[in-house]
Image (cartoon, rainbow, N blue to C red; front, side):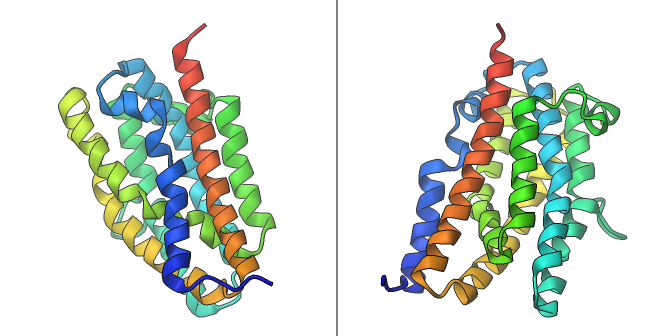
Length: 231
């Protein structure tokens, strides 16, 4: 029987998944960051990405229903507030809608889902179902893409400011607020994974869950890029 990895080696293995497979390396993101996308392509991306954003709270609510420790549930609940909003925060969903509007879409279009591509819908629904059906700690591990998101947000802000100056400043509010939240969320998730994935088998399942999530993020961009490429 294999021995579990030491904590440092386990975290390094998780980080290696992102280094190889996180969607910041997708050609569509490369085009975005180099200013090659049209206004309509940005609108298509923002509307489709909204389907993912609106389902993040559903994913987290499903995970909460499986999480056994009330203390950890209380900490995880902050994610729902971060996305849905609360008394002192409009929430990530509202901020993403401002991006949709800044690139030429409308909130009504976003909520209707009329522009969601089949590949995007399939990938997002598969992620929510994964979290509903798998052990809760695997759902936690799948969220560790947040380890890598602060860097992509920093690059995106710089790219939009340089290449898409017509995008209203308020449209970038989601990107500006996300790195700090992602750091707090990933710190909590790493803490949980290190605490509960104490065998080689459980560590492998955590790595596999993160790998799966990276594939889903990549698949969404594949669908968007194919659509934007035209016939």
